[in-house]
Length: 271
Image (cartoon, rainbow, N blue to C red; front, side):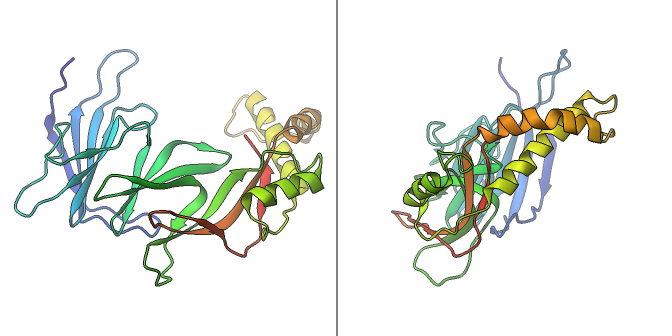
């Protein structure tokens, strides 16, 4: 079915910066196809464009998980860029094999995209060069991305990295921690995983009890119900591999390298 732009629903606004990203000069959203009246209704299709000094980032969102397309459009002085489905001259469309998700922000000439879903309490992200469209780096982060001014020749990124340790710290702590340090870095401080597993099991038990209540959002899990559900929740949680979260820095050079920053290490069971 051909989609006809609905130019009557054009929104042009300024955008507040996220994390410590550069603030866009402006944002433009165009509804390409309004929501249908079918049952259930098909969602509206929107083009969201974020304008910077030398380029525009365009996101086509059809209301599904992840954007329909993500692209970087170079801007030329005196030549207006159209926020539409039609591709502009020189537009760099991100290959879905390289990344799919949503636009996150821009820092200097780097374009950041987030994942379309979380993993192990973290969120995937990817960094692309706005000039070449090449993916420079991707990883999973817990919390915000920050850009400390370290006076390096390349942009430095700081974030709490989330990595599945691939083993269970509760079952064989010595062997598992040795494996994790071998994979992630020998300078990591060993975390207290036991408390995190216990907390996760209790939250799982409480969630199940709340789901059994008549008003799921209002009924607080009773102590008796939690006590009943906790053994099974503990058993299930204890089987999960250990996720390690630790602060890192990365210089976004042609060959980025992750380096841990001396901070306490966090631990929790994988999804």
